[in-house]
Image (cartoon, rainbow, N blue to C red; front, side, top):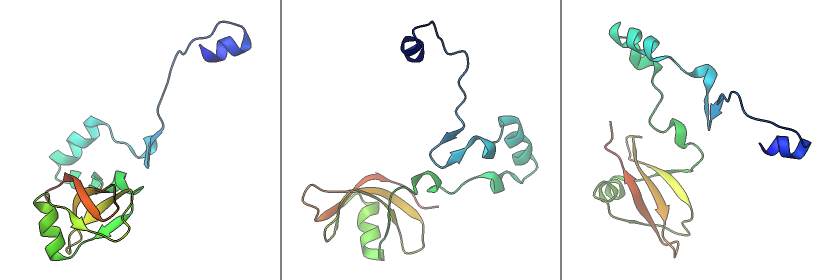
Length: 117
């Protein structure tokens, strides 16, 4: 519609195909039928992406054991000059939370806490 107005003629969208969403490309996608076959054959797990595959735009925050335990209970973690959003990992390297800096920049606040695999 907008393009038609700009060109002073009629216009409409007949087809729209999303070829990417963030880091995920259509060329890397699998059909449900393909996934069904692979999982039935016991090889489907190799097609799965890691839990943090779509979160790479946020910096990684590696937590020690005590801080990771606090986060797993929904508690904040002290930080120096925190800002923005981060992916938080426990000492074993498992993604455990998405965290955001508080307004003062002194603590990381868990926004989504995940059970490590």
